[in-house]
Image (tube, rainbow, N blue to C red; front, side, top):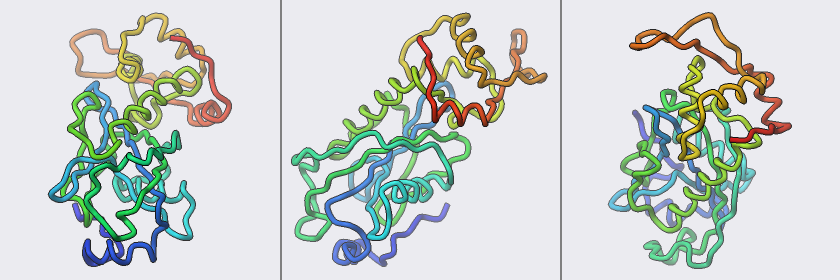
Length: 248
């Protein structure tokens, strides 16, 4: 996979001339969630000769914050039009303690805007760039030590996602197009970090009228094959706008 390249030829040029392209003092950090093998994943970058961090970047002079976040996500995942939500601004004066770059614009204090994204794991092809050596998925419970306040940002994003489960649907962006009810329940249980009653969960999900049961069944299991479902895209989109009332 080819690496994403910044509009500079070297790190030194980026440090010296980046302010001509990007706004100083303001950045975006993205917590990109995926779901694979019954585990919630988060996409992380490893800086060259440095620690792991969240995928992030800077805001161009003629770019909105949302446009910047979408650009960063496309550069990291290769995907367009994915679920993206701004959730918090992180501005502690000591948040970048230990910053190695001094003097240049990038060495100044930065306030970062946090976004979280929900993506289908199988559709993502992680891409590092000029400043990083690796980009890959980690289980949210097994992330390595992260730079600055990035662990706090990730935790805040996960807590925000958990709280949103009572008002907004999830699944469309994290599951394959066709899925079973047990797969959907496992997704919710993984995000919440707790077990849910099977009958109550199914009753609540069906009462939302967001699911379409297909005539197909999942094949390959040892037990009776469960029916496959898919989301009603129009109703799902409407629910994202108007909200829901779910109680687990």
